[in-house]
Length: 315
Image 1: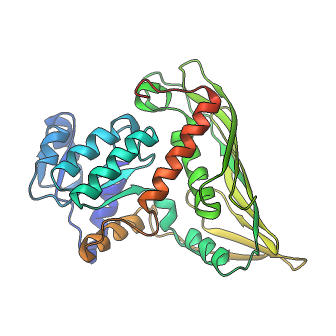
Image 2 (image 1 turned 180 degrees about the vertical axis):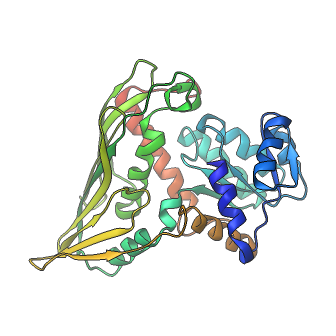
């Protein structure tokens, strides 16, 4: 992720952002990354990067278990933060991050890049203008089967591994965007030999009775997509739901209407433009991915984990 974001930053050109410094766990690792992307300043620790007075905003791409620690160090030094999803391990950590940013009056945002893509902007527009009528049901999910690697953060509960924080967060975030904070959360799932969650189904109840049925798996393969059902029609968000480019709208008995929403490059640049504009305008958060909603999403995922009996060592 760090490499992808660095490449996107280099390609933004006149957007007003400069890729200025990199911090890693060792100076050698930082130097190798800097050489790869033409970065002028290197730091052999995350703390040293946080102390760099020439840095305005930091993108955090460490494992989830380090997000809060790294973000809080940057915020304490007056730096804005774009923190990779999942924003934190749990709602408690997320609350500390948000409280610190608001106290220091610095920018903070979860790097939920999907929110900023053209197709998802079109989804929000269709829902807002009432095209689908009253939303009643959101159904979506998918699965992939990674090769097991005991050294991978994906399979390490100490680092926040598991399918919920890696992939399920996209689905929970989209359900939140569409239905708001749930009034009820149910989930079932399976923990793998390493102690991380490898599969789950999630049922969310919206405040007005709308429901979301979500699923995610490391044990089976299916392209991740999403369907939004309303009283006036339905909208299919084609896979991959985290980077969709095609929507299919079906109203009543009419023929389906397909619309294409191309994504430039990897798709990660849109969130970087949002951060840059926010800093230029003096905004402390983004209305597209507001901090209160990020907190609500973490609370929902905490409830999902409680249903599964899944606890991280830091909980």
